[in-house]
Image (cartoon, rainbow, N blue to C red):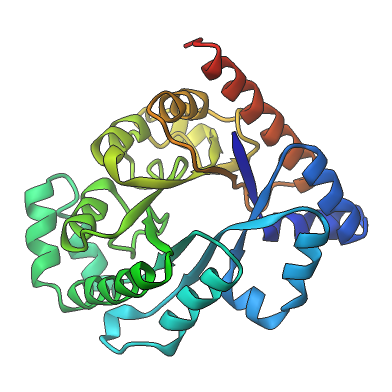
Length: 289
């Protein structure tokens, strides 16, 4: 099993524990974590990050960045994103293409219960069409440079990727586009992650292992969203273990990226998440359900 973790989590752990960053990187490597998820802008601002990671025996599993593609203007960052990923040997990138205006987001959410209605709205929305065009540009660049381009289920109601139907529409418009399964974000859209993963299974290229903790006011309502609290993988109510096993059984050999922004104790949570994922992978390898 290949495990990665968000670099921002490591930085937060350094702030919380006052441990030197190189010491934390070594601890993370010793815990069986092989790589980090890194924002493009952070890498461009501090190019010594690559050196620090290499000295710790870590690589970059995915390079991510946000855009405003809905405006219909190609950004020079698009090409730099792909080329930088190729340079640092990150095989995948994650693109957040942009967000809708408040009124558009409200109209889009009204269609969320049906793929046909969602697709019809997306096809006539100029901002969303521009996002699809931008993703097409980036997948073409990625193909030329050996970099896979992905999108994720994004936990923001203003994102047209906030839900499985919106994701499916983008994947149909951009055939070379891959999907990063974020286990914790379908709850934000009120969708069952097992059903959503099955609906999008064949396009999964990358995985974020994000669990969610219950919030009483939401848990009492029932439904898929029982709370959005950040917790270590395995400590929440989402079927993280089940999803990992299904992915392994289906031949997924990519990274499982630990994600829990803003947990109170990042160092402990990172180590707990890594241990949980290794345990699940061992069970899956042994054929256990």
